[in-house]
Length: 614
Image (tube, rainbow, N blue to C red; front, top):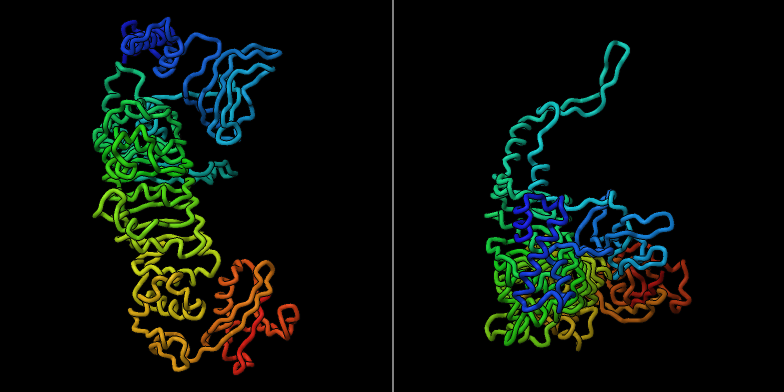
């Protein structure tokens, strides 16, 4: 504001007269120095830092323009890290040094002809650098300018007809291959969009917006977007939160803001206005830290219902101690800060411990949590009481409002690793695709296991679980727990087993009898036989003895054996009748009909011996 006032007093444009901007910046810095008790002579370093923060350009040969955003003529975006003369063999021209968002865009290490002009932290990993000529760069424009360009520009030619194709000349005086399409109401739509003070939604993603307006004398800019409720400012040239605030202050009804793929200066410690009406915020691929989000929510955005913070390499969910303050636990602070949050999307980050996720357990309104594409191995609480009671309260359970959890594409290996989900009181929807526990067996079998182990499931991987499917899955699960689990391990590896027995009225003592104590509609055959199975598959060898129903098909048995021996579905296998062992099984003994049952195989009376091979 002081810079603008200084410029206005001299009657000059701040974007065309650098000297005037520097004078205004100097006034701001001098004022800040006085307030902080510093003087110009005693702390030149502090003064230079303030100049960069305010936006001034110190008069030095090498200018680092603190985070100024730019876009190249080929559409790549980055930060200016250097501006000045570069001495080459044939020239001494002015160049920019740019830190590109794209880590493959540039190849420079900041050196030219043996002279180091700028540092290159993170080069080749998350960013890249290069020298570039000024005429190949564009810098930020105002929100007002981009709004007028996108929504208020007038059409050329016919307002109601668009021509597709190209007119050609024929031998009969004229022929055309063009097609004219009439757009009914086009004029009315354009006129309505041109009423910038009435628009509810503005999509300025990918534009060069960097600040609000350049011309304080143009009073029409003050009404632009005043009715906006939903604004997309993703992948623009905004470089700090003060500019974000300056833009959003004009939107009286704003409830949704998208700032994805922007590079914003560190926000912790900055004083920002409060936007109590903002409900949804998206900050995907911004390279921000989780503590910055917590700081924003506790200061500027206290009413968030929905937060998307994907692809930011988040590893820890405990906010920095300086933000929390004394006498408050991280979980308590997050619970208070995000007390209105209903949806939290943390997809494609680097979270590898459920103990970090437990930091979110006290969020009182959290209904949907998206953790796809992280590195989570298990859902765990130290004790059952830790899950059923909040870390900070003796009454409220952890994740007390959570109804939907997405864990696709993590590294969960065993079903027992997610058994703690049964302690979340309101959970109804679960996604588990692309985890090792799903990939090791047929998807239909994995679905059966999930339904049986989680009695609260209503939606699994986006598909509804109806009553008939649940009944069939639970009975199939009971059957296979008996056949493929040692009796002493059942209570440990299948915690729901006894519950399911009671639900379906099954006496566990009769499960292995020849009489078949299960109800008739249970698919377990009335007779069970013992099968000795030897695996000769490379890297998955072993032997096991299992009790199986006579009507089980070889295909079903093979699926279960693949899971038991840890054989990936990508490896094709088949059963053989051995002459002695896996080493002597021959091709002629292969059982080619996988739909035949155990009862169809010879040697039934003396027990069945099978070999599983590639």
